[in-house]
Image (cartoon, rainbow, N blue to C red; front, side):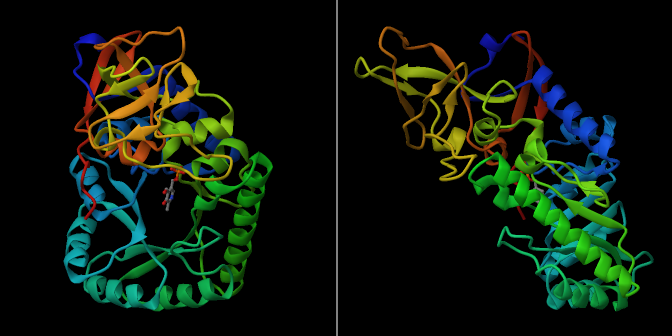
Amino acid sequence: MRVEDIDTPALLVDVAIMEENLRWMQAKADRAGVKLRPHTKTHRTPALARRQVELGAHGITVAKLGEAEVMVEAGLSDIFIANEIVGPLKLTRLRRLARRARLAVAVDSPVQVHALAETFASEAEPLDVLIDVDTGDARTGVQPGQPVLELARLVSAAPGLRLRGIYTHEGHSYGAPDVAAVQAVFRRSQEDMLATAALLRQHGLPVEEISVGATPALLVADILPGITEIRPGTYIFLDAAQANLLGTYARCALTVLTTVTSRPTPERVVLDAGVKALTAFVRGAGVCQTHGYGVLKGLPHLHLEKLSDEHGVFTALPGRAWAIGDRVEIIPNHACPTCNLYDRIYGVRDGRVVNAWPILARGESR
Ligand SMILES: Cc1ncc(COP(=O)(O)O)c(C=O)c1O
């Protein structure tokens, strides 16, 4: 099959670039002596998770229990669900899944600890738990230091649970104003994590895992000694946001293949890809700031200016004709939600389609 045989809109990945991205991060983890546990929420694709493990990843990360179920079904066996699992319906599913794979989950409140302990107290094996630490992202997580110690004590005293360690996600690195600021965010986050781990150890609590990571931080900053695990996700593809940080689109592996369906004016080019093919995601500020709703591959100064459900619009360059029926590849602003819109990813090498990986955990957000 050639790329011309794929109907649009379709999700493509340049396999050579993806492989290079995978090997780059694995080599960074190996050099630093840390485990790589990639976040597979980016692709939701078991075949790609297996490739990450083949190249050296120690298990995978997911964001949702539904993703974990799909990954276990596909043979992945060591999974950290980097999220709080809440409610009796999910706890029952979690208990069932934990009998089939090595799992760990996150907590940031005694409420979750009590519910997990109640669910797992009578199980043969305890459930591993990592404390979610907020090092500046201001999403979930407890503050570093004493609050982590208090929650860690509760976890280690709880029946049915085993404290594996602590983790954080530097989501705020996306909004840092420049590369130096991204590096400072990552250094500060790791220092907070190391100091918190030291506090727990001083109080006799074992901390096997100190897990950190976000792709922008890992692209441009060093991993400090003492960190044991990194969890980047978007690094497998990179996207327009990461390209702005790197100053190049050359490492972007993922594109949406589209067709020009209308040329209503000499300037206006209309594609068959809108919100349902690209998402309307934008990064509004910082070194990862995006422009428009996606960038034309090979023409990085051209971006989609307008999206509706099924249409994307950009302005033609003077002297360059786009005709109805032409194909255009768009680099998405954010790889993760874009993948969730498709049934499969076509792997492309030298213009030939060499894989069609089913995105089996697509839509599995429960
Ligand atoms: C908890 C957690 N860890 C790791 C990641 C990976 O981040 P990135 O895609 O920037 O590598 C995310 C992404 O949202 C996350 O929420």
